[in-house]
Amino acid sequence: MRIITANVNGIRSAASKGFLAWLETANADFVCVQELKAQENDLSFDMKNPCGMYGAFAFAEKKGYSGVALYSKAKPNNVQIGFGVEEFDREGRFVRADFDDLSVISLYLPSGSASDERQASKFRFLDAFRPILAELIAENRKIVVCGDWNIAHQNIDLKNWKGNLKNSGFLPEERQWISDLLLSGWVDIWRTLYPDIAGYSWWSNRGQAYAKDVGWRIDYQMASPLFAPHAKEAFIYKDEKFSDHAPLIVDYQ
Image (cartoon, rainbow, N blue to C red; front, side, top):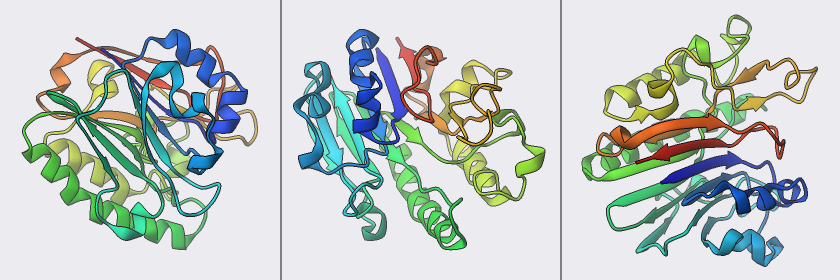
């Protein structure tokens, strides 16, 4: 079973750069997409159902902003849009699809880098989402939460960690939130499989960050204890560049 998560920084932009064509060859069972930056009527048929997959979407009310999608080969038994907090459900940050013994979630956690106001919103999201994650663990089923978490957890997770200790995405409170999440039972698949490999998935557009691989690992697949042992291997796909993020691919058995 192959699961891909990718922040596309605009589904129309990524499609013009070959993202949908790549999905035709990627052989994914599930694809979680973040930052659609589109409304439903902006999407072509292939954006709604790439490779003939089923699509589930959470669109932001604000045009050209946020939004997440979840594509699956199998038809979901149930789809949940949003997690019940109006401030963030209006921004299109969460979609869940349930299958027989597995639930897949596409998540886009707010960035706080634009302003103090956005950082405050990010902290509100962390506070609101913590009990949701606890409820998911308590379901005692196979669950994977895929997406752009906008937090680098450890020093290994970003190239210039010393220069970012006071910056959004690497603040002590954010990093502790991830630590608490892992202590509660969630498993960071990449870091568990590869303790010593950075695994950067996002690069600033400033300078030559991508060319010099000055990146951050902020895209995760977080699995519940029942699902995590099924992870076999993971990849960061960089052969083509669809966005300022690279797709994270995990194969499960």
